[in-house]
Amino acid sequence: MPILQPDQIYQLLRNLTSPVVAITSEHGGKRNGMIADSAVRASIVPTIPRVSVYIHKFNYSHDLIFETGRFALHLLRDDQFELIHRLGFASGRTRDKLADVPHRLGTLGVPVLGDCYASFECRVVNVMDTGSSTCFLGDVVEVDHGAAGRAVGSVMTAAHFRANMPGEWRGEYEALLRAAQAYAAERSRDLRPVIWKGLAR
Image (cartoon, rainbow, N blue to C red; front, side):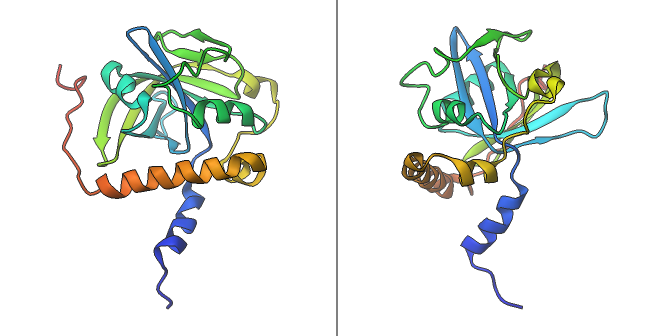
């Protein structure tokens, strides 16, 4: 049996990638939106809807979510390339990425985007440290069906985005990916036990 190289293993693991999602958060009047492809359904019980998502610690959204225990997760349509570029190719530390994006404050006080396949407002119930990121487990407390209720389009996947993004974005995308991989490579072995503050009450 041939021994696979790290790059080959990485490409195989890409088959496990979640849909591309937008994640929004708010803390102390500061709001942000980001893009992730690490969100999964975390419960098979219909009456206990849950999701989990990994957020790198260098993301501005990480601390907003960690401090408040609230976020909104949005499934995107497969034509929402511009929204991915706006939220995923820049940092919220340098500009308000939601300034020109239609949204409202949801039940939990987090921004809910106005034009997506579906959105889920979530309250964090537990966390897991991965060294370079935090895995947030969230109870879904509010849902907006969005385009899903109108049977419009399909859900954006990472493979669809990589294959169809505008060519002029590709260099920037690959540079951002390399930077994220370098950050994670330095920190992924440094795991810290975390007791989520909500569980300590």
